[in-house]
Image (cartoon, rainbow, N blue to C red; front, side, top):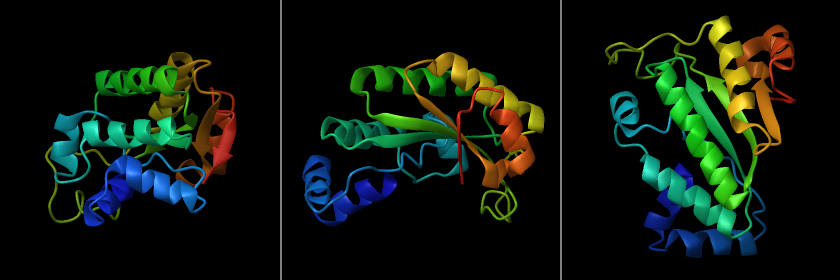
Length: 178
């Protein structure tokens, strides 16, 4: 979504016009990245200047309306509280009920080591990522909240490692990716 928004701005096109042109050239799906946690205050603290929550939703819903399915992501383990995770999941569920365009949800735990927010310009209260227990809890909660609206819940074996990813398949995930 962030790249689509950037492309629309740079080419002086509407989101719909750019997405239609990309679809006409063969684009048939998009990653739903840049979501972080869909809470503007948290986004402003972690990565000011990045795509706003309302802009992310506009790109996603525009893509879905044109028949371009997307994934949905959520980064966690950085500044968020449980209420932020719950609100993010409910927002995704509502969007899915409205558009039906998400193919899967991919929870992504924060990997701090090489991020600008962690290196040099530390963000107050920033955590170095989720614990293993939190990773399992987020996947299980996602399955409960998203239920049947999201057919697929993906565990990232690259972020979590193969052993924890295997555990996540018993905690609500039904797909592995990386």
